[in-house]
Image 1 (cartoon, helix red, strand yellow):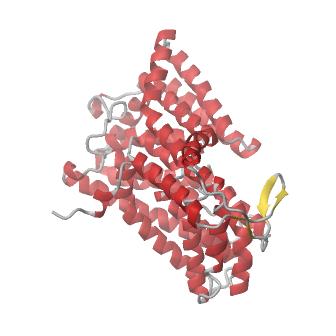
Image 2 (image 1 turned 90 degrees about the horizontal axis):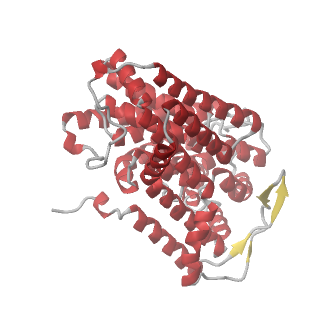
Image 3 (image 1 turned 135 degrees about the vertical axis):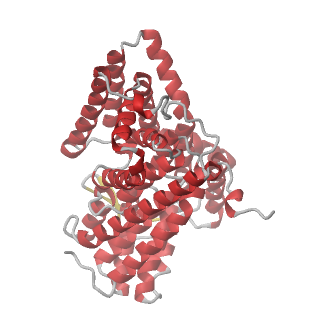
Length: 463
């Protein structure tokens, strides 16, 4: 029998190591180059038109393996928030509060509304991505896992509802401060201007994802053998008793209430004091202590639950470090700027609408090299904005093309620590995720490119 394309997807660790090897090889093939940079508001920004070729420094075998520990060092914030959220959920799982709360919710709603639940929860998680952020939502992912299994789904459906929706919502958010905010500041556009077109795109993409999740849910309901999460341990996520036996105790309400209070504190800190990953990790650690005290766990139990929880998320933490090593290798070889420069030059001679689409595709490619949205904006938009003006694109269209290139490709980007971390929480290997999400990725990409092409003739402007 002929193999299908997904049979050729290597193990995620092998995939990431292969990408690291490719980065090293590129350091021999691609000329080293650099843009001049200036510091504005405490952040380095590329100076347009300043690209120059510099002395090449191809990476040695030692450099390649040095990139791995350096990648872990660079990604330590994301690695720790993954561990902290995993430990926190371990204590919530031990208390039984999440299982009891979701079991009671599903009992009251009834399984007849299970497809409606998938639709609603996809938009709920998508809204978290739109308004709250990306890694900020990592603690919410296990809730989708318990809910999905409670209504007869699997862990892949849980990943589609949570990881997929958060990624789409964040990537196409009309109010994303990291991509849109940074990009519009560089383009000197009013903050979050042009939100009407991006809002239509974001809602359309989340609607497409909802349909895709429900379609998958119906398939696995017809036969569990088509589940893409067969063989994955569901311990700690699956309901342990019949729905009619679930109720919420006072202790459950205290645990869930503490979790909700912690999330509200995080939201307050993010929006009021600009908290980021380390502060959120600290809140998770505080919640571990609070929930442990509510559970009346002994010191011995504290230690066992923490180490057990760490063992569950450790593979994902390792993947985050490996993913970051790819960017470290590209930076060591000084070829990221070169790739950005030559990609921009390829767009100048294309027809206008095709150039707009080509810019989004070029940014998609760059996202695998610079997975940080704000980092990519600072590195590529000072180059892309003048190119867009030369070929007749509005600055708003250039920002839209940049956002789509960065945001949509996040669905399949193994070098993005956030998605690797959230999939690890769902216990979904990246190769299985690709089998699930690849068709939807192309659907959303085509939809988004249509929006980019439309933005050109309508002269998509600042308002």
